Image (cartoon, rainbow, N blue to C red):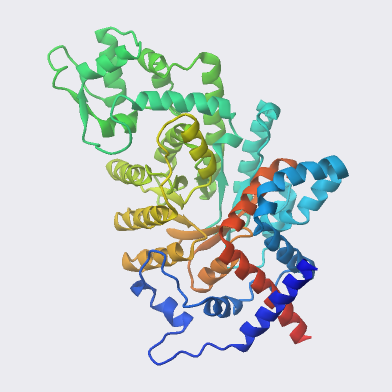
Length: 541
């Protein structure tokens, strides 16, 4: 009965909304006029609309669910209701496990595929993903494809990782087949390399960085080569003076002698830019005695890290060949230094053309994000390269904070959501105000205020969004009203569409449910828009 009362209340609310017409009082602007005058709006948490009624009236005009079947609309309403229920979201993983035990795997997967899966995924095979692109009914909305395979660590095999890499290659080919300029793929390094080896690579990269102060600030800080030698010795690296000379020459192209070792300096910027635990394009550097000792990676682990490099190269080669962007996702901080190392190196190789192909992802809920982004811009300026960045808020807050408590180190996450908003919007403006021709920025957000701020910045700094230099993106099943609104205004916008084996996509679907719970207002609007579509169809018949 409670569910029935809920749906009746939703229907009554929609009827009330439909009877209301927006009548601006003297001097008051309509939502459409507000959008046209967006540059005058305060970007931080500034709503585009004066009320939920105005918001509903504006977005209902798009009829964003007009291509959905009756079954899809009913499923959307039920699932959105479930995803805003804290009890359901917090226990959905347990509920799934119970369902598997009681009903069996096949029935459980069928239920998930035809409920949550219909909203948040584009299928479970490459053929289904291909069909989703072929039947995509929104010509002004682009697609970003991602293959999702979050298998338990104990089930991961080298063959599975190779297959994952091949799926990403096929994703690039699907994008090219679509004959659209602003399609692309998104990938997770942990899907093509075991997290165990990524952790080893990450620890080695952090150890290398520790020659200088933590973080990416104070880039003018420097050490002379004598101090560099002392750092190496402190890390149990054995070397002769001649080997140190060869090291300095190979990595920094500087001539070291007995006479100038106190004067010859290496800046923090040079060290961060040149030093990696593994080089994707230089066997000579990988074989260097000093680097091998400093990184401290044994040969068998190094072989697995090299396989990650080879898989990434395979994917990036395909992206470069077909001019399709490759977005490399951010992950947990205990993996990110290694991911950054590989992404930076591949961007150096593939971003030398007219437009950036390889894009790194920056999680703006991290306290370190402003420094990291400024460093990346300065690095690209120094090398004469465009930058490629996907801007997100972040997806691992609960885990990051738990680990910080357990191991007693500083919480890497911003203290409040308001601080995260400030970080996101401030970093966006830094990128726009330091624009390099050929750069690409993807504003991946479901936050209405940040999207509005991004539009203001595009106008302020005269950046052509239609060509995809700055584009917007939302996950399939989330922020649909924002996607359609952006498309109607002529901005480059895309949906991030995932596919993959259903039994390995459950963690992904749970995260989508958690995100729906966090954006209650958006979920409520989605539900009302779905009801509105039903009423429109009934009315027209």
